[in-house]
Image (cartoon, rainbow, N blue to C red; front, side, top):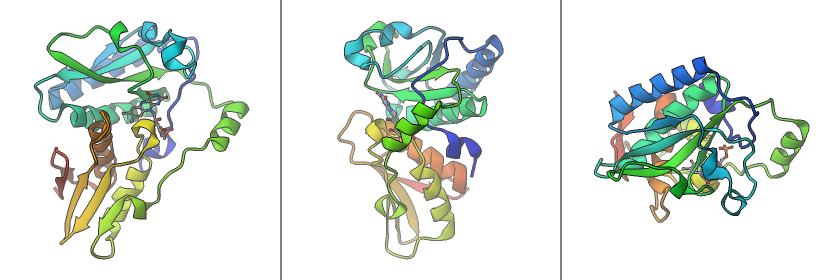
Length: 235
Ligand SMILES: Cc1cc2nc3c(=O)[nH]c(=O)nc-3n(C[C@H](O)[C@H](O)[C@H](O)COP(=O)(O)O)c2cc1C
């Protein structure tokens, strides 16, 4: 499995020193490529810390927030929220490969502090920054509060034994980040057709669906159609 998929965890505590100018250059060129491919308007913001200053919203969850990627696109763009997840996770994994820390953030920040064009919707942000190797306390905290990872049987419904290639893709899905760690995206393999769906009763569900589809494809190949219930095709 791709190392970034296995190694990525949400990082909320960053070093004081900002990302270097060469890291910034790489990130911006990745964003440009992904915007081109997706029609999105994601943007790197060198200092977005103003959206993380009110204790009320961020509950002291984050330390030394600085660089932020605005996950946004034209309000009229079809499947906007899902595209943000699908292409955004490409970005998150590439940034993980650079050795930097990331965290998707949908709720715990002040949206009003980040200005976007009237024609655009800011779906969420991704924090980016230098991270130290997790300290002993962080590790202890993590294993104490260790995120629950659902098992494969909780994420896929099938009318037959699940073939190996689907299992491979699902292993990467299990490691995908999701808002509030709800891991709600569900896969279905029936009559030899694979599809992916989500309840869509929370504002970031479709973003989670895009992230889950991306993880599946990175491991198993092929592509899902966009849309809730989108069908998979081996390509
Ligand atoms: C769309 C989305 C929104 C998220 N929003 C927040 C957030 O507002 N605050 C936060 O601390 N973490 C947020 N997260 C991070 C999740 O809590 C995290 O991915 C999940 O608990 C799994 O942990 P992991 O990323 O370490 O594997 C978000 C994740 C996603 C995918």
